[in-house]
Image 1: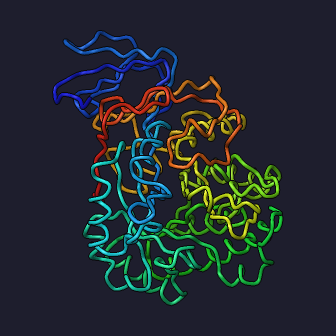
Image 2: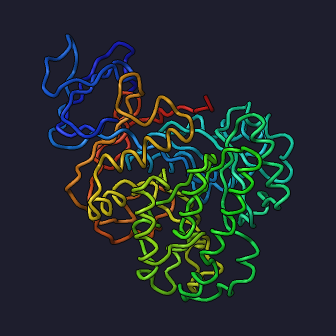
Image 3: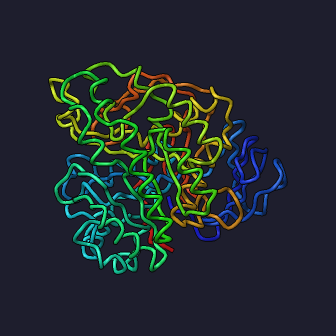
Amino acid sequence: MPQQPDRQVVVRSTRVLTPEGERPADVIVVGERIAAVQPHGGALPAGADLVDLGDDALLPGLVDTHVHVNEPGRTEWEGFASATRAAAAGGVTTLVDMPLNSVPPTTTPDALAVKRATAAPSVHVDTGFWGGAVPDSLGALRSLHDAGVFGFKCFLLPSGVPEFPELTGDQLAHAMRETASFGGLLIVHAEDPGVIGAAPDAAGRAYAGFLASRPPAAETTAIAGLIGLARETGCRVHVLHLSSAAALPLIADARRDGVAVSAESCPHYLTLTAEQVPDGATEFKCCPPIREAGNQDALWTGLAEGTIGCVVSDHSPATAALKQPPDGDFDTAWGGISSLQLGLPAMWTEARRRGHTLADVARWMSAAPAELAGLAAKGAIAAGRDADFAVLAPEETFTVDPAALHHRHPVTAYAGRTLHGVVRATWLRGAPVARDGAVDGPPRGRLLTRP
């Protein structure tokens, strides 16, 4: 049920993840906002309800800025109702939808209006939208920016769907100059088409063959060019789903030079390795690909050092027939990992093994994505922020059962894995929306626009 405007709730835990770190605390919620964070065990405000979580951890609700919902037009792949249920069950309270795989793609204000009208009655978490930079939208990006998208996504090679074509080098430079002119953000699928065109063919069941078809040089070449254009144009750019650690020195050097470039990675790159992928297991296919264990170690170093700022899902589902062709051919299978509900436990499982803390996970998966999108009310347990929470039992484990997932098709690369961290509950703006994997009540998410 939605909160009453003047209702007060005290959420108490011995493990509250605040911007200053983890500590015992009472979080005072008034209506939809956090009013204060006070010492643990204090006197309750008059008339306040107490929710005592004991030793379960209270994290800020996750902010996932990389989700393919695919509706309208490819609702048989996913949809706002199913995707946002999965988000809520997994501790995600805010997501930003990608502009492609829906029909129409979000490349004009009219298409954005269609997307918003489709999403409005169905979202269980707060939801915003990226716009698309495609050849036909160049010169008109400002109108889409003014309509409220959080930035613009582009591809440098074919996207996989014909209605969202890639940009050439000249068109990318045009998009960056245009975006810089009004202070916007360009987010980029950075793989170089020339490098991939010269790589071996991906056909067949062998994962090694698919991996060879998307070599690390495809990412480093594209990112080097992107950084060069960012220096020239002053455009703020963000590298999506970084999988190759070889690009980290380029990004780190550019950031030290003051270039406005940032990067994200995804749970599948940080928790799964190429050595674990059986031949024919196309549920592991994504672009760029899951790489070897040594590369993963270097990605974690980049994350710890801050070169990679965000960890987001790149949830990109498809029908089972598209994702898992009977012959197990990596070339024909759809590329995308379905993980929206599992990102928090997957990341916590690997983070704890590597000596990181829940505070690190909260920074990577909540605070940093909120900052990227400019969502000042999200991403932290602090006075004045939205009362968005993920309640986590950090030391409890579970085994991933695809049948328990809320996204439309029960296909996931995490099937059968035992993970640490059970999401007990998710709160959106002061009220629970999910408990123990079940999503409570009718949709109460809101549509967000760029501040």
